[in-house]
Length: 358
Image (cartoon, rainbow, N blue to C red):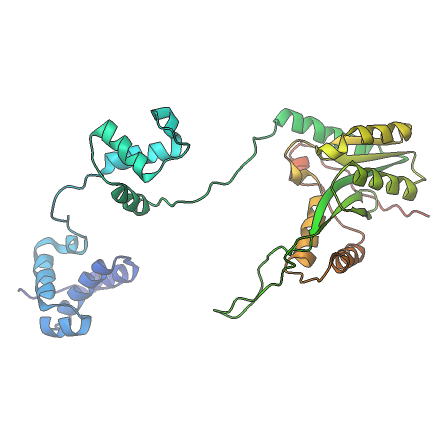
């Protein structure tokens, strides 16, 4: 084997490339060439790098003949793989764009067996389902559950409803404006992240049988005060109870405007009957469908669950409710703002003013 001599600049470049190389085989070849250039013998290199002397001789001889191409993996010997690039592209297309029933299969999702049968029908390639599974992992695919997503909301309806809300906010004189929403308090705690020692997972006691309460709240946009009522179920009775509470507190307002979501408990016959009995004092304004980010109350619920309901460890609902109500009282008044969806309308939301009620 001829001796290897590397100029100082090439040696520095090779050291830098070896540190960045991700394949162990490539790093080993670069290391061998560097040690050969430094004057070490093949037996010494084999003892230091825990490889055979045959490998050292082969790498050195190949470097003298091919140069930097030595560090790249050579094409493996043996038969040509059945799942080549064309088969890979076809499988990726089937998984990302097609459904089995389009090709005559009575399945709603692709399995390794169905993919193997499809390859046999279209390309005449006979492979097992195990071969397809190994290839999918090699190509970066994983067997996971999809995330359900609702259909996108109608952009024209969303813009129309948000503009209506902004218009009402600007025209408030002797009226109250509220954002309303509900959340659930579960005795079975929501699981959240917590600091714990490595290798030791903390135990979170659960009640066994879950009990729950519903909280319906309304945020006063004028002064940031948040009002809520509690009930065993999320239904029209809970919503009417909140409306009655708002009418009792804000008797000084001629009219109350509530921005609500599209839940069925807000449009039931019981609610319509209560609105008629209020003689037009209460008016409901629906939010765009499937747009919870347009309701500032969602941020209040998020903070409540992060601070109180995750990993709470309460023995009963009374203790959990007491903690939740204490949190809501201490956070008053809430300094919230309308979200980015309102800013995208090209009209800035009106600034909130402080109103002190006697």
